[in-house]
Image (tube, rainbow, N blue to C red; front, side, top):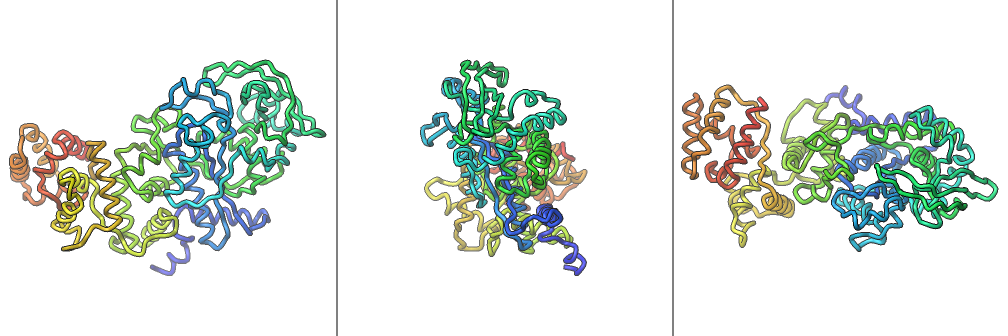
Length: 538
């Protein structure tokens, strides 16, 4: 690596290292204590956490790791909003189970699955489980406990005392006048237990009491009637919470947060809270980075309430935690569409990243530095000492489909030895055994083949097009094999060239099993669709 590259590279050369340096420079300008620099992620508890829910955590954690690498003490705060009210019955749960609890704090709703102390605990545990699986370290805060213990008490007093100023900021930023008339605080109704149905209209700083009336509220087009109760609540009791349009600011100051990434769907709330933090709480808000949302293949935002939930737990059935972190960390800006069919591609891409890290693949020096950094962040800065055995995902899926169940690993090992992926007599290690498990799950649940992007020559395009025409009539492996030979000869290609192209498109490898049996085992229709997509991408 050149001296110039070394001198201009911050940390590991990634966006996260540059962001960490920006945080450090800003904190120094502000003159704040640098003994501990905290980053934060928001943790929802009102529905099933989806892939996008990991966005806050993985990106803020990477910045925290970068801060440590630059010589500063840092920790990630996982703040769970389990004091939030249930606004909608999530897809996947029956209305009968939860309809009656709309408007109740999720920490007060029984767990419909019966395995946690509350609905909120169940939902938040799913994301925490995913963080643990990815090796992400964090300090956990439950909003329910935070309010009970009074950790936001000072901030709540300031916000309620200056409620008119808070309301004016909200009005100026988003045109909403609600909080010029009511306090930015929801009391839990003492009589009916609802959260969002109450309207707090007065705060007495001498007694710490909020005065409210349970008037009802329309949520997601559904009216939740109030019970009409009018009462008072001591904010020290923990039986209430700040609105989103002020709570972020309160916890930033109370927990001394210096960086938080956020999705663009809450950009208005972040902007409002930034002003409230500065102008009301007199605390400089954390540095921010806004990221785009993940979309499903139909272009809709992946959402826990919209019925298109793609959870981390689903990913872990078919792919490694590191491949999921690669999805999150490879790029910060821009919208991306994602679904389960992309997992094999990310598994293969992570193998390529590992090849760069261990010097098996050469690129320009600056790119090598950056990709090595991404690799290390995918391993949360604890990379392995040696590379794993790399086998293209589609090839493994084929082998487990063909293997006798009683000797699956032996069969796969023998085939991989013959293809050159394992040395003679080399056994399947723990890492490869896990990959085989992923491929087994994939073969059991899906038929789709994810093709590899390849630039086809004009001759190869014609040969693939001819093969597609002849595949439907080919009913046995020998006929398919001959169809490939003929397609090559008829279009000016050596058969070996076309076979290599097909291996690369279908398996991401230059060689593999006989293609005739492969096409039959994976399904002619699936193979045809993969080849058609490869042609359409040219």
